[in-house]
Length: 410
Image (cartoon, rainbow, N blue to C red; front, side, top):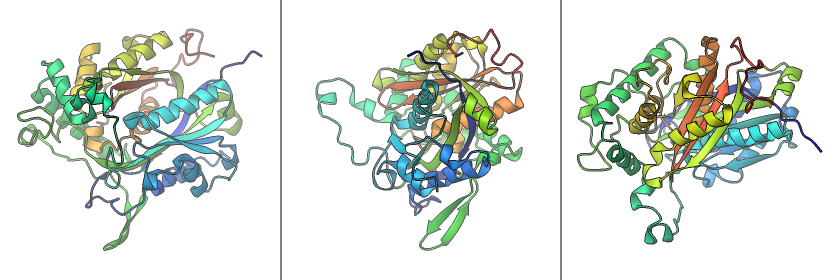
């Protein structure tokens, strides 16, 4: 029988403050699953119009699905957050784009008509579960030269990207890192970051219970001189440092997605409408270039061009990959459309959750900029992939009019 596609909207998103991974980090003795459970509970608290029994699915991403990040985390998070036992859940993994994939996968279910309302997000406790813990890569991938061994080390792939694009110098990357720290600090001082942070209980045997209310990674006041003195751990006399790349972090995110019809029925406010999304594969040795073809594909599907994009939320895994994206599309690094509140170089990048952080910030930018119609969220992804999601601003004067791209309208 014929089916009607349903419009998918982003209702709300939250995250924990992001912590530094390791024994000295604020979440060192806090369970990973408790971080994302806290996010789910906060979404329900912030959106009392949503009856818990109307949630049709909970999709939670984690890159290292082991220990307190294992055991079908989406289902466990649903049960432990107080959702009815009738609400199912599942886990998903696409490394750095885990939460992004949780969003696009469940959004596809909404568009198809299988769901009305879902919760999607991610969690990563890199201090407790380092990337690659328990992994046993098939030896053929290197022995048969399917990839260069550097493809399995994300920092090495960033150095490879510098080789591919020699015009992207260490100085440019350091300047981008300084700018990210500065923009985040300014946004924090203006009270823009705090509304979507979930105060999160922390546990320590020595210090007892605490409350995390702010991100640990940011380094306000960072200068070019500071970054010039840092080591290049992935290559002698290289380009990638702790100052122009995201750190190792712990944290969680979650968001509510629904059909436009369900949002109208329940009185939920749509902050963004899904236009298109795309994931692509690229050479694993230069995985940082992934967002370029992913964004090109998403733009083509939507019938848009890069000139239609009024806001960019680009994950700053490494400055070099963001600059490669911007150079390709002819966008200046200091363009006010790009990461207005800074990015992962400042806030941290706990792998799987980051996609929803980017989306939540894009929704906030839309609220401040009704003149902007379209925004893109894009990420590079380990083992040679890229992801991009294009959203539309419901506050724009032409929202869902007849000139909406045909690929986006139902």
